Length: 103
Image 1 (cartoon, helix red, strand yellow):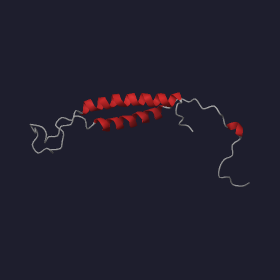
Image 2: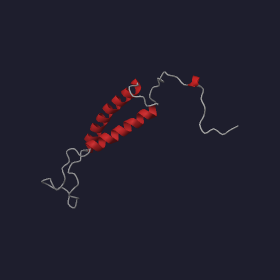
Image 3: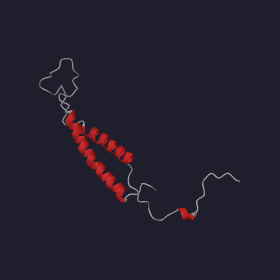
Image 4: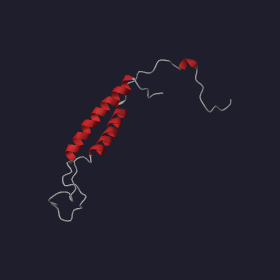
């Protein structure tokens, strides 16, 4: 019996109809995490005032490039809202089958 590098499939195994599978949950979570980090890193530099720009330094010996008020909590919520919207659009495109990611 010769060694075959590629498996041979019968033509009946191929279907012209695309598979209608929903997205799995781990895949949806990974997509949300990716969108969240992208949006968080995009939102992070918004409204940042360095200590050297502020009228009152506030902390002696602090780095002059450090932000006066980073407002991280507000930026996390904004990144979450943006990521949720982008995630919903991405999941809708994948589930609708407009773009076939399965080959």
